[in-house]
Every structure is written in structure tokens, then in C-alpha cells.
Image (cartoon, rainbow, N blue to C red; front, side, top):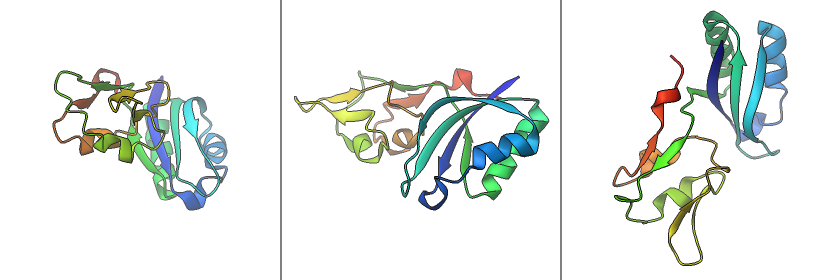
Amino acid sequence: MGYNINLRFPENISTEPIVCNLTRKFDLDFNISKAQISSGREGYLILELLCSKEQANQAKKYLEEQGIHVSDLAQSIIRDEKICIECGACTAICPTAALYMDKNRHLAFDVDKCVVCTRCIKLCPVNAIKADIGSVNE
């Protein structure tokens, strides 16, 4: 069974082979859906763990012990254009620039760049950004 998780690596460990060690330690397979990892910068990784629920829970615990922020993953972010006031606050916190102001100063969203970190959801003053929670693993 697959368990989708979002990993946020602190800058001091973003280049460590933690996912490699994870697969060896817990004998599981994985798929990387999206990743943005650079030396000396915070890293993001969307990982599908192909394993039992027990293995997934052990793996998440191990990752957290390594200093990685782990959260279950919604498959996508949804922006409600009808209530969005295009204030641009979300652009300041978006780590991949998936949310940005276009040349006409309108809020734009590049879904292919989005790593579903969900930071924009917490920041939006009018709750115009939501997670597609229908895909979150239980």
C-alpha cells in the first residue's frame, strides 16, 4: 500500500542520505513525486512509501528523529479565485515560487512547481487556499 508524505528538511541536513538510509533500515520501497533539495537550503520532498501501515509509521518516526518535519500529504492545493483578494501574502512564504504575482500584478499559481507544503493555507487571510484532503492517507 502507498502512503504519501511531505518531508521538510532543515538546511543543515538537506544533503544527508536520510531517505537512502530509511529504505535500508525499514526494507521499504518508495517513489519520489517532487523534490527540491539544495545544499545549505531547506529541502522539500514528496515521498510515496510503498509498505505496510506499520512500516510507514516506523519510517515517519525515524524521519522525525532525524530532524525532518513529516506530514501526511494532500495531493494538491486549490485556490478559490472567487474569494481570493490577490494580496500576494502567499507568494512571500511559497518555497518554490509556485504562487507568484504575474507581470500584471495578478496572483498566479503554477501547480507543477507546488510541493504541497501547505504554508500558504495557514497564511491566507481570506481562506482562499485549501488542500485537496480527499487524497490524504489515513
